[in-house]
Length: 88
Image (cartoon, rainbow, N blue to C red; front, side):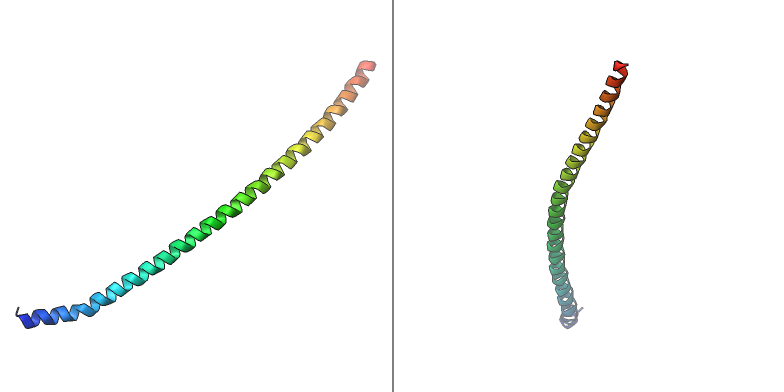
């Protein structure tokens, strides 16, 4: 191969290399944007789960209080019945 042929091959491959380089840079920018968006979504989801966790804890506490009051009422009814039976 002579020098002219090598120069022609080099000049022919330069546009292809530039196109590939531009594609790589564009994809890199898109990946960074995607990673940023995923980070924002994670942060938003964590915030939602944290607020939901507080709500769920409050609901469970309310249910515990409800069950305690119901069980206390049942206990009083049973005590009254036992007392009535003991009096007989």
